[in-house]
Length: 312
Image: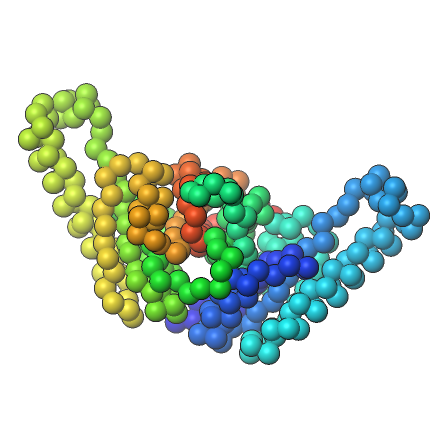
């Protein structure tokens, strides 16, 4: 199945990361996709423009926009022969708004951009454009955590086996299908993980669990229950690759998932980022937000079915 027929690569006009070029190229070749390299000229406040030039602000922004388009074209010209179908485009405004509008107008299936790396070895605060797009862009967003042009070897599908709503169940299935699809494109190893924890000891005592043995018994029952849920989700997904590695992580998801990613040298995490539909894209779930701030790998962010972007 071809998930990505139209790919939008969001990039500064004067600096296209090698990882962005290579990743979009790998996907495009496998999917026979059309790729648009898209830059946004951020609008400069009129009072600042008045200091920079005697030209009217509208004319000055038009000139800047044209220069950015020329710069983008020159850089894309160097590698466009590697792509079957490619073009460029430039807009003026706020990057996340213009990218989202472009996706909605021309029906793109995937947005690719480079994440902003923090100097700390583990911490990665994704740039504001990436985070805004993860919240508000209607299609999947792939934020690349490495500047290196390398293939993805290990991919994680992070699911919530006990999603409390039907949209949560459907999102789990979408995450698995997407992760499996990308793993097939990259010939990568797929890990399916779910993080869980038992209630605290006082709560367990209310269940009658007063000893360590009884606690272990509850842990075993919980693990068996989770395994059953995960097996049911996986049975609904057709894998065209080797069977996935399934891991249940005991503990808080925001701690255990980044730790698992680091210890297992994971290259990409596929996860849902918007906590629910009905509130149009203004929130990222607390767990997803925490994971984004901790991981140093790439993230492919999906929205639940029925998501409506707040960007008009």
